[in-house]
Length: 264
View 1 (cartoon, rainbow, N blue to C red):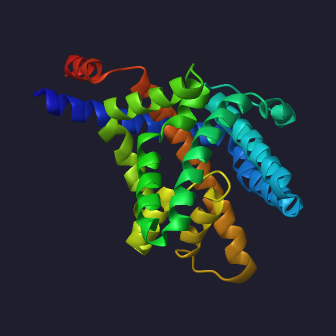
View 2 (spheres, rainbow, N blue to C red):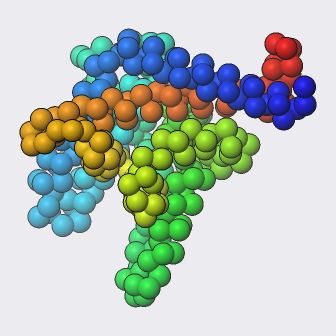
């Protein structure tokens, strides 16, 4: 067996194991699905209240997004570590990774601000913004997992993301590409826009827009069904990513090749 064949076998085994673990975790913590629309509603309410507050309103939304992201990642992290988070403990999760998330958000906000200034002066350069955001989406994709499974903050966390992506580019991006297939099937442009704009605030809406196109329903029934299914998909995807990241982060390619050969 060649090293390439052994690596492929080892990677497929990790995918299967991550899929099995993510489905089992979803079954044990199915209530987490309700957090996705709940946090989305909270952020919409905060955005509505902050609409006329100017800079202070924008800062308030910024803090609310960071707090909700911290809570969601903390709950996902507990589920992946086979812990059990009770609903009455949710209040303790909003500050767990708050500082780490604020730092990351601020760094990317600076990049977004600079890109916005460039595009505002020359609208023809919109493709540059989309290209840079897509690159950020790919290179820094494992940041959510590093926030609750890693040990570093700030620039060190970003460096860890780059290193992980470089070491596990194919293994990490293949499942991600498959998750984005529905968006590209609708329209390739939509797929790239999702890669460029997917975030905490609009994640549920983007997935709902895809799910709704595949459901044979209409009206309120379509809205409820699409929201429920989209929430399940988001939670499952985050659990799958978490287990996959854990497996890849704790082993290198040489270790996986060696283990695959040992298993025969």
